Image (cartoon, rainbow, N blue to C red; front, side, top):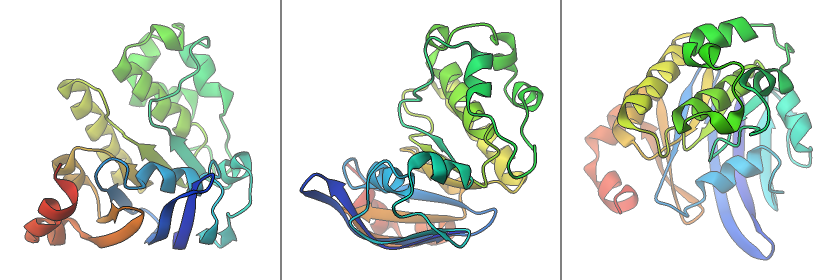
Length: 231
C-alpha cells in the first residue's frame, strides 16, 4: 500500500531525515519508534505533504505523493490524527466530524458509526471542541480522520497526555480497527501497548532507520530498547 524509499527532508537548510525507508501493506499496523527529535513526526509530515521532501520517493497505492498538496494526499486515502489533536475549537463535535467527511472508498464510516464507536462523542455532539477533555478531543480527532474513510490511518502521538483509563480506551479502539483490517501507521511512547498491537516496528535514530522488525523480534532483542529507545 505504502512504500517509502530513501526519504530525505528537513526545515529550511536544516536536514532532519536522511534515508528513511519502510513499507506498509494492506491491513498492516506499523509503528515508528525512537527518542524525541529523531524524525518520527517529520516523516509523517513529509508523507502528508506538510514538509516538502528533498529526496527519495513516496508511493501510495501506485501513486507518487512527492509534490502533491496535502489535500490531494488526503483525498488519495491517508487520514491523519495529528500530534496535539488539533480539533476545531469553535466547532461542535458534529461539525468537526462532518467538516472533512468523504465516502471515496465506500462509506464504511458515517456519523452514526463514529458515534457508536465513540459513545462519548454522541453524548457531547453539541459541545464545542474547546469544551472537551483531552481524551474526548483525541476521540474526536480519530473520529474526524475516520470520517474521511481512509485507506491508511496515521496517528502521531496517539495517547500523549492522556490518563491511563483513557489511554486504555484508545488502545482498545485501535485494536478494533486493526481487527477490521484498517491499515495504521502509529507513533506513541507506550512501547508495551504498541508491541501488542502492531505487526512491525521501524526504529529511527537521527533521521535514519536503524532497525525494523516484528514485535517478536523486538521482544527477543533487548539491545534495541537499550540502544535506541531508552531515555
